[in-house]
Length: 383
Ligand code: SOE
Image 1: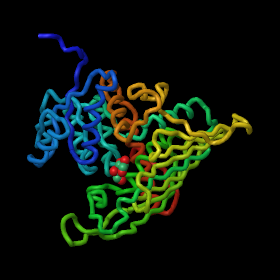
Image 2: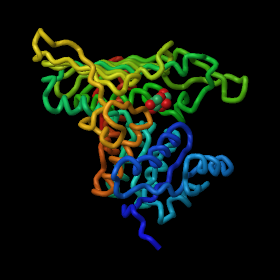
Image 3: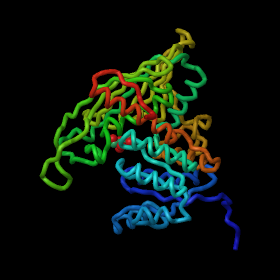
Image 4: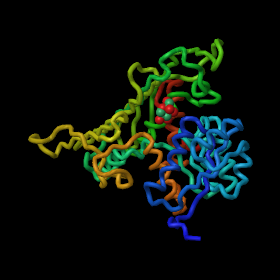
C-alpha cells in the first residue's frame, strides 16, 4: 500500500443542525484543508439531526461520512472529538454543556446563548472541561475586518473616538413571512436585536474594546405573523428592531442599529471607526474592500480611498487565489474553522472564545434591561 501523501492528523467532527448555518459550516470543513495547511485536518464524521430521512439526505448532500439521530449517541462516539453546534439558539446551552462534559472541543454558532444565565453556565462548563471552545462570529474573519484590526493595533488611525455600526436586512419586512423560531422568546432569545446585534457587539469588542455601558430603545413593529404552514396567526414575542448607544471602557462612544425590516437593505452590515488620525469603513456588501482615510497623508493626497483586500499580504488571502481575486461570505467560515483547528493543535481557545461570547451576551442583556428601565446600564458578566 502506498503511504497517504497527506500526513496530517485528523480531528473527527460532529455537526448538529443542517439549516443555513449547518450548510455554511459543512462547506467550511470541506474546503479548509484544501486551501490551508491545517493540522489536524477535519474529518467530517457525522451530521446530527432528529429526522432520519432528512438528516440522511443532508449528510449525503453536504459531504458527511454518516449521520446520527441522537445527540447522546454522537457524544458517545470516540471518533468524534469536536462538536459543532449550528442548531437554533434554544439548544446551545444543553448541547454545549453536554459536549464539554463529554470532553469534546466545541464550536458554537452565535449568539452563544439565549440568555445571560445560559451563557454563564456554558462558560463554567468550558472552564471545567479545559477543551477548546469558540463562538462562530464569522465576520471577524473577513480579510478586510482583519486588516482594519491590524491598522487599529498599529495605531494607524490614532486614538479611537467613534464607532458607528448598523446591521440592516429586509427578510422580515413582509408581514406574511412566518413566525420563525427567531421571533419567539423561548426559541430565539432576544430575537433580531441579539441575532444581528451580537455580530456588531462582537466586532466592536474586537476592534474598539470592551463596552462599559449602554442605553437603548427597541420596537416590535410587526406584532403577529402566520404560524408556519397554517393561516393562523401567532404573537411575535421579541423586539424586531433595536438601536442603542454605547460608551467603551477606553473612552470611545458608539452607536448601533439593527433591523431586518429595512426595505432595500439585504446584508447591510456596515461599521465606521473614527480615530484621532483617521477613519476606517467596512461594508459587508462590499466585503473585499476596506475604505481608509489617514489625516497624516496631508491635504495634497488625503481622502477616503478603497483598499482592495485581495493580496497575499492581507490576512487569510495567501490561501486563496492569485492577487486581485475576490472571495465571498462562505470564506469567512473557512477562516473560522482554520483558526479553530489551529486552536485544537495548540490546545487554546481562539477568540471569540465562550468567555468572549459571554461578554457579548452581557452587552445584549444590558441593552434589553436599558430598554425596559430607560436608562444607562452596565453589562454584568458575572453574578
Ligand atoms: C438572519 O438575520 C441572519 O441569517 C443571521 O442569523 C446571521 O447571523 C447573519 O450573518 C445573516 O443574517
